[in-house]
Length: 78
Image 1 (cartoon, one colour):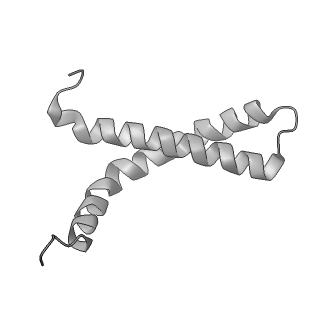
Image 2 (cartoon, rainbow, N blue to C red; image 1 turned 45 degrees about the vertical axis):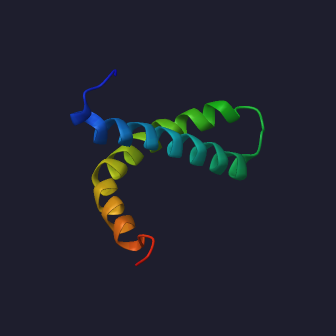
């Protein structure tokens, strides 16, 4: 174990936001500009802006989203 269990929410938020910001930024940059020269630079610039925003959003909304998902999931036999 690298991190203590009390940091689960922060580690989860970090990883989820890294994945989401990276994929979304790469796709949106590709759609908007194609693979023209400078794509990686444009992607990196957008990612540096997007990731802290994504991290903050996931950090604060994940508990509500988990509770909402729990309400929407039906246990077998109910």
